[in-house]
Structures are given as C-alpha cells and as structure tokens.
Image 1 (cartoon, rainbow, N blue to C red):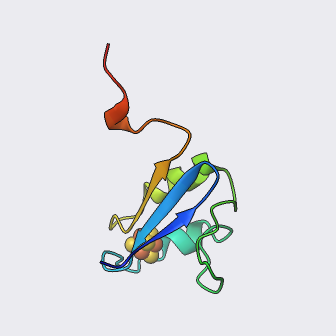
Image 2 (tube, helix red, strand yellow; image 1 turned 135 degrees about the vertical axis):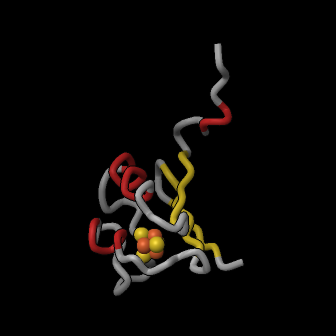
Length: 80
Ligand code: SF4
C-alpha cells in the first residue's frame, strides 16, 4: 500500500499513489496546496480546510481523500 498522510490542524489528507491517474486537477486547480516541486507536496495550510476538502472531492480517481479532525465523519452523525 502506498498511501501517505499529510497532517493539518483541521484535516488530514491521504494520497494513494496507486490510485492516481495523473489528471493534474489537484496541482492545476490549487497549486498553493498541491505542488509537486515541494516536499511535502501537500500543504494542508495553503488555504482553508473547507476549500481543500472541496477540491479533494473532485479528484477523479479517489487517490486524494481526507478526514476532519474537527468534525464528525458522516457515519458518526446519528439520525434523529
Ligand atoms: S486530482 Fe487526483 S487523480 Fe488527478 S493528479 Fe491529483 S491525485 Fe491524481
């Protein structure tokens, strides 16, 4: 498994290189966060966590995913 984790204050971002189809959507659309010339290449403080998670949601392969530290996961929200 080749998944890497990038820690941020509000979120942690996961990247699975085996799933990436190299569309370039992440680096072209949000270079302040996703920059292959930098190490680490994911800067979780490059913009707001809301913007980063919205951009990760359009990754076509599912290679990029995230987990909130500050919000419950969907499966942790109980229905009333
Ligand atoms: S958007 Fe997703 S599939 Fe495209 S390059 Fe980035 S990680 Fe890979």
